[in-house]
Image (tube, rainbow, N blue to C red):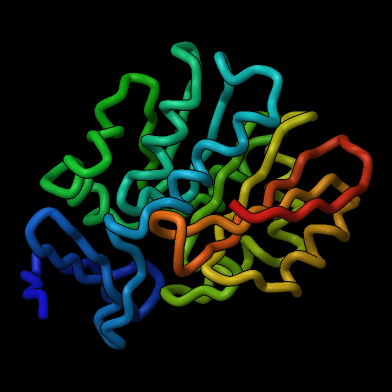
Length: 235
């Protein structure tokens, strides 16, 4: 049985949830303290990387894209987005928990290649809702990995992002022809129906968390100003 060392703890603002960061050799895990359940890990990173990468194939201007990522996590979504983006792109990452930023600037950052150091990265510490409400037709890509997806684990306030008003607000912050990408630990048919109700083109991806076997996570992509259509595939 592997031994894990506690590296740090962090209270989630606006909730009673505490996160803990643990390390075993070169592997890291973030858990919810009260339950011990795993929220994310460096080994199960495939779907987080896909969230950062996949939307770029559906926009016309990856070289100059303006991108907003909701949730820094372990940095893998940000790193993948920067790899897919051009040198003139601008990528803002919003993270609610300041300690998560500190962890990414420390040993945890080595696993993702320290994407916070990239000159194209802008860091916002706070609730992403503030950015969405403050922007109209501003972003080419909005990639959301907040909490655990539509079925949140850490903060009830995050549920608003996945409600019809939250979806509508996110769409308003997107430029015509842009893409919203949502990450979820589960398939969540109810949330998929909410996205279909927007009338936009919806793409659903089932992506392995690690390697080519085992757990799959779900990524929905909403392509605005497109004919109403839903497609689903596994990768």
